Image 1 (cartoon, rainbow, N blue to C red):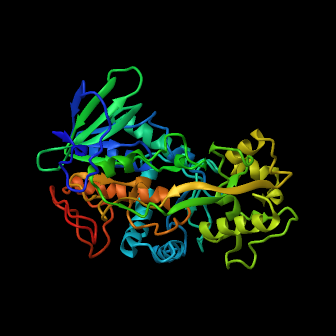
Image 2 (spheres, rainbow, N blue to C red):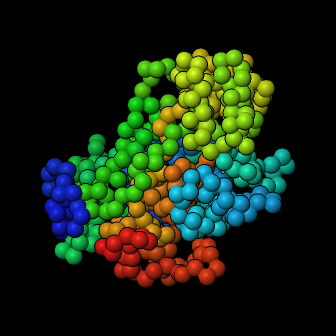
Image 3 (tube, rainbow, N blue to C red):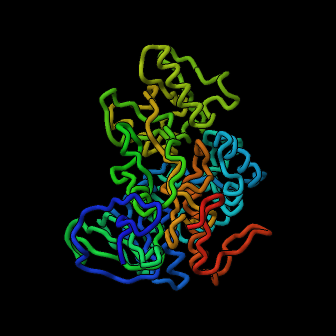
Length: 454
């Protein structure tokens, strides 16, 4: 077996990372790279289907972007809401560049996927009396369809539940492991990965996991930018590996900037605190230094316009005012609401000397989400046979030019489940839409729609 960087795969870059030969190796049916909502969902479903599954992650299992998700997960769960309405909002936010078939898959299978997540142990906030899931609104949504947990700690709860499920299932995991390159066989098919385990433990140094299927779920690349909401591990490793392997990459230019990130000064760099869109969903106002609501009249949804529109409006008004930030005013929430609905954000603001209960929050856009990535079809298959991708590292076509708020966790869930169904076609269907083809047979490596056959 050889690493794809040797040029054995047509379209590969000819580049591979310099590293010693693997000093240890383990065998599996599936290796999942990444431990966010996409990676752990794929791993759990593959293991449940009887596939020997190994999870490899760059840091600890609960590190990564998922646990930083504040707002929630979007799905048509509320009374009167429908997948068609969710579809319409997603297409509008994507600025005409979404793959409608992919979006329809997302919104149709999404509600059942969220319910399965709840069945796996995730606890979402409920309505008074506990009769149903509490739903809120975010930018671009015309209905309340965002489920949240712990007020503004949705990602923490989802990560907790999935990590607990992985440990309960006894899945084999390798933490603190940087994946170096894809391994391929003499036919150019995926045969595993090489990796470098950083630190001490049973596995140390450069090793390999041999498997005929590799699932990339490595998250985004926000650390490429000086100001970002992304954790330190989000450095684009999965896209880099896929490029070296010769996989097609799509829409990398569509990097979404979140409009409301806590402004820490012009010299601030690295990960910066996010002020969730859910704060605006509950009625906070964007204002300038004079208290003027500049989003009114800019869009029918005002502060809840899609993120690209709000981010541009903030910077436009800042430029007009000769400054580099605006303000988010939620003083009218009162202390009780801040403490119960947004405790994480309240603590973050106060740690930087800002009290949202008594003063507007200074905000500015920062790099947030990669809408593009490794190109896949509706089953998560890339153009390299045996290589799959899901979550932020993937480009499924769902997001178009601009992701609709809280569609990211849902995308990770839905397409991770689809990958598992593709790898285990004998398993019960987890939500195929009426009239849609069932999972492909093993060895079917059909390329994404419109892509050349590998």
